[in-house]
Amino acid sequence: MQANNNTNVVDGRAIAAQIQQELAARVAALKQRGVIPGLAFVRVGEDPASKVYVGRKEKACAELGIVSETHILPEKTSEAELLALIGKLNSTSHLHGILVQAPLPKQIRESVVFSTVLPTKDVDGFHPVNVGKLMLGDGSGFKPCTPAGVMELLARSGVKTDGAEVVVLGRGNIVGKPMAAMLCQKGKNANATVTICHSATRDIKEHCRRADIIIAAIGVAHFVKADMVKPGAIIMDVGVNRIPDASSKTGTKLVGDVDFANVQPIAGKITPNPGGVGPMTIAMLLQNTVRAAEIAVS
Image (cartoon, rainbow, N blue to C red; front, side, top):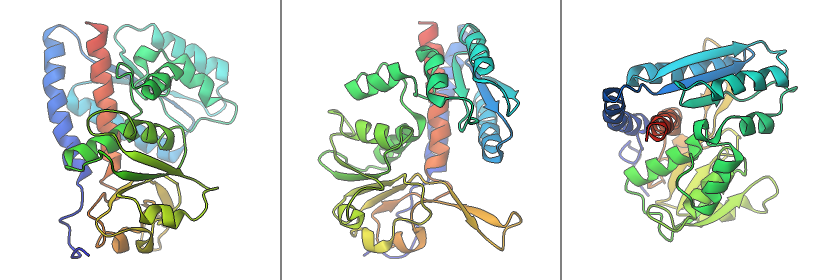
């Protein structure tokens, strides 16, 4: 068992900053050719978390030199109105990426929205064409930002996935399924044996205890306990959960899916939350946008 210190904590902020430094050179090269990468954000309604997320992404774009524009629509916007806006953004040449912030109001089908964004501007990686390319191992598509960020964290932290037993907690379309697909691909920094666990999985604890790597994206605060983790396992915490906190001004705080305080002394490596996977999601969005601009002018 490891000592209770921070030497095994993976600093997502530092790794994301490293990626952004690498992207800065690519942005500079594009600007020398007269091209400035452009990204459109679309937010429907006033969901507090969505406002925060879009704000962070806008700031990251500004820091890197990506031009962004944000379209804010009322909560009662119809699906047809949103699709009409996306159609205009699809045909706007100086915008290389489009991100429609989820969740969307009940009257709007996310699947239809994600399918309407051009695959070449789908920097979120949710269009069926890009999802299909991911499943086929075709690297020409855009990968979903959060699982792609986890893959970068693993690779840049020196974690060997070749032959590793990986448990992915969660089967969602945004993280769980694409995460499993990336890990089991035949290739560098992949080649893992993957088990997806979900609400109908029998004895999740036993699946987790044999895992070399656990990726928690199940959406339950502090779900992964110390008795679910074998010594030396790698823990990636994707969860974002709000729980009561009397000491906070808002009365709540954000925590992950992992009981960090008790799991960290056991883990070989572990991401904090916040400060782990979150910054990497934004870094991958920036990377996809820069790549979309490069493809557009190639």
